[in-house]
Length: 406
Image 1: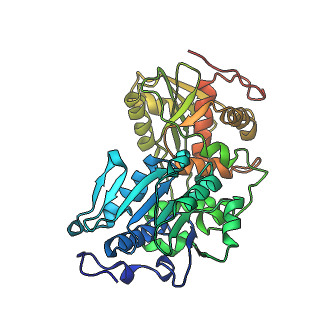
Image 2: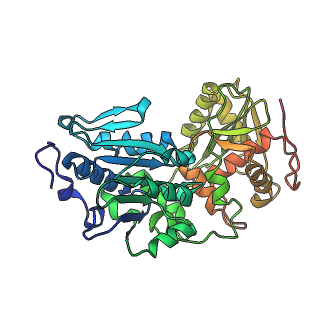
Image 3: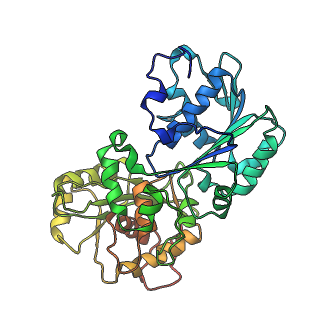
């Protein structure tokens, strides 16, 4: 137990049993758990305790990128700075990628994308976060293992939502690995109703097993988008884009059973690369979502609003025009199946011609779970309409879409 170093409620009193460091002589504590389980808090509290007590004094914090390590492991809601009391006087030096406690314990941030930076330094403990996202998981782990040369019993905490990566399966078979499995639903008291509502979209899919119940599920051969293409599509957009459109897949009702209205802002740079810039989708009455669309049109200086008109027809145009007659609107009608319309966009993702300005979790889950002949979700539909406009795809049956260029 910690001494009186904090005025906050001790972690041991509020944590669930499977969030506490396990007993025994383990070398690796691997937490395979669904989103929202509390993986980050579990690891951060353990690192904090080790640092304050001096049990471990030279630690590595490794995420997919340096930015993610800082945003989640250090500054996030469950990161080390957030869970530490001000009396602990934990200092963070961003330029040095360094956390320092008054007793001399330090933790250094690393990005797995540059795993060779682990050559040279020495550690007695480490925390690896979202290991399944790493492009080079085995190489990163091996390099870290060579660096754990301090102390009599170096330890690793590994937290991740699982994916069918062979190296994770290999780790689970090792005698020195203590594996904890956990579900998102174990932590419902601390999760927002909005997040819990979004989990309903995954019901009955492989992602429900993977993202909520932390089961290692093999990739489905039926989905249009591969997880790999989605996970590798995140990229900062250029500062200036002069071709921005807003795709809208409207819902005409706003009951508890209604679909959301998909509202996706997308833009194209001067090199023919497109970006999802924002996801403003909402479950609301038509006048509410229409105002959101018009506001986004002006905020992003969009050139066009693309609205599916299968339901509502001219009423949708009149509604948007009633809010601002100056907005430019193009109505589109879904003559082809949703799968045929989506296939050219899937190809563009595979060719690395479409990127996401940040992680759009709900949109990306809809993409990853969509299978031909299944009901196409709202956000995905809105994104497809926007990208179809940006790339000037006039015939959705083409296997090689034409590409708009500035």
